[in-house]
Image (cartoon, rainbow over all chains, first blue to last red; front, side, top):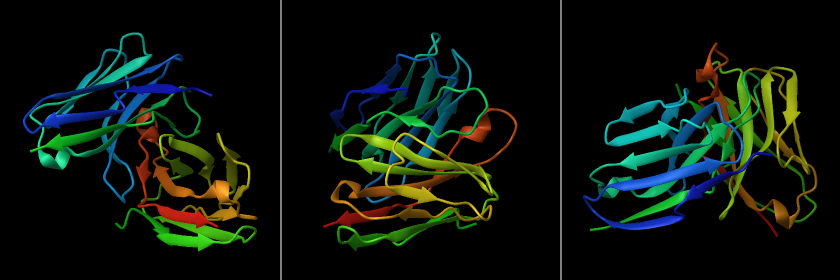
Length: 113
Length: 116
């Protein structure tokens, strides 16, 4: 099956700093999604991307669907303590169909006050 | 709306025991899926369903059964629990709408299963 390479695995940053993480795939994806997971909770959808080159923002979060359709990145500006958690990229390779998402292994964001 | 609900939240089983993890959604979503999450592995798809009466296997289906008798419910059955099935299990659902928005999956809070 498809695999997503997500980096970095973890980030230790200071409050107020900007954050950048990305996902790459050896396969073409038609949809890219970014999720955040808090401890003991299920993943929550942050941003969904549907077209190559698309740039979408959600508050301080910005994500882009790469032109090659094999990558995506997520930026968080001016990080705050509640941004702590695990961020997952997820993609869907098929057009139509209903199979589930392929997930990256996550980026663990830790913010030092 | 309660969204996606899962029960139980925690469960301990002995090797060889069977059990059913419950999942329900009240959003009238036609797509439902089960994932397992293991440390350092992300989430991996176990089984999914595109509607009542239709199920299919995902990436790691062995040792699990599913059925979909109603739109709302999608239980996951462990037939004979093994220590390798110790994991956190998430149920997810999404709309069956035209266009890519059908793929925006919403997750339940998870069931933490330990098999000894």
